[in-house]
Image (spheres, rainbow over the protein chains, first blue to last red):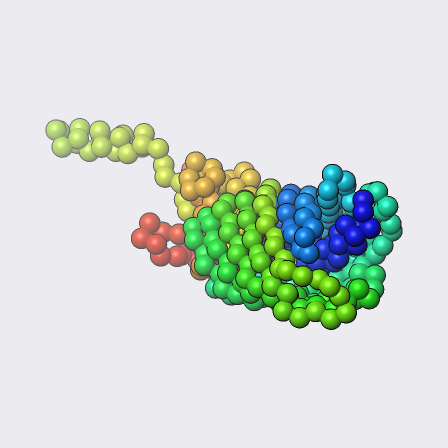
Length: 216
Length: 111
């Protein structure tokens, strides 16, 4: 893999690491599991992710994330989201701490580790997520805020995302819309984030992410 | 005599008619989204007393009102403890369960 492509992959990985593994919303039931594939593009680099989750009970999950880029598999990321849910009438939410480790499974792979701390709540009409994470020299904050439109057996979320990243490679702020649609056990997510601020880097363009997931 | 025959025949027909499943409703804290609550539907539908021929495998999640409706097999007894455990395994916190009358009204449930 070319050095530039590797560096770009690491930077896009920082975005991927930021979010709660696979899906914040589900599966929150004992013995639940799910898979998701995502394609993301940032700074002229396209990466495909295969992600999976298993839920022992609502407070403990295990996750994996495997990137694929330019014909090569990247480094596998394993995580253990520890969640504390609260259910209050027409509102639900959770606090979450997620330690993660990166295994050197890819070409030029390397060990790494990180963690995130997040808080999310939702009602039948509103959703919010705040995710503070650190990974190597990178520290970031992701915020998702928006409206939910529930249907019978399906639903739509229209959210706005703000992502802040500070790292040795540079700092940036990206923001843009997120659309999430689910029907039964299938969830689709599409987002675009525009680079509105960058410092000490030559990043360019927007971030695009499209994913399809299944939970059982 | 003719009236007596008709009454007996009517009673006999009623007795042979299959009994309707009983419906129950349980209020659940935090259910606001169908996708997030898939586990509740899954766990409740697997309970042995649930009539899977009704609703969606026996269960109807009404996320807008934080309630779950389920059908119980004719002649079966609803097990409140198992029901609450299933909902908790599904990721949510049950409040109380009621019998659901045909007119949509609730009636306090007692074993």
